[in-house]
Length: 125
Length: 270
Image (cartoon, rainbow over all chains, first blue to last red):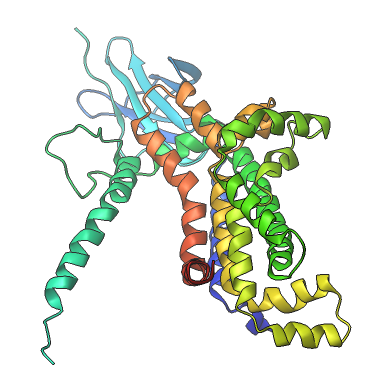
């Protein structure tokens, strides 16, 4: 079979779509470990150790908590193996403050995400 | 001969073309922003566009499953339309007793809406054991009268001497249709492909009647299910519409040259 048979607009269009879909699926497979990393800082922008970070999923009616973790001595936290694409993160530490649930949207389930900005606790009254 | 400047006509045409594109741009923009249609002042360019509404559509309902179902049904319909309509169109190019009556019957049947025949169609499909199947969904649109006439017009344009020569060489009728006529009727094939695909792709009522299993639903049924599941539908609904529209749009844009040629030929001969 001659390759020139495939050089028409149909095979080029659908071939390009197939190639893009393959590249996207490879990218997803390499980045869907469900790892979320970030840090928690206090009202004074200093890292907060021992803050509770809650990962919630947006369902049809409510946001349901799916996992929780605690920040380390440097204020860093990490979630592993989530399978969500529309999430909320909230952080709190008694005596320091609270950050209300903040929405994050991902392009596929379990997408790895490193928060660019830290979760900032606001002092509670 | 006095020459008129073309630019005023072109200006009007560009303006009208842009006007025709506004609904599409609006749908696309809303799918990227979720902006309510009543927002004021209206804007042409999207503010903070993102693709998250497409992600919502993909995961909220089994979109890929519906897409596969729609593709399977459309593929059956397109293939069946080309084969059956080509055979029917070829027969109408030959002379036989009752030909005119059959053409009149075809034309009269075109005036009967599908909704009128939906109960007999359902009963026949049930008797054939094709309820809840891809073939059952494809069955009523496996041959369409408009497309038969498109093929007839295209076959009429082929010189009779060519068919006579093939016949003298001992070619049977089915070979004349598929080896001789079809390769010379690319515009009619493109018209059939586009029309059959779009009719099948957008078909809502018939799948709604015969499909019971959620996994067998097609995209139009998925759209109606999606509306019942998603609370804030603005952005996601438009994203869904774009995702449903896109395959038909791609196929139309790819085949538009042949499609228009096929329709023009049909208009001149039919």
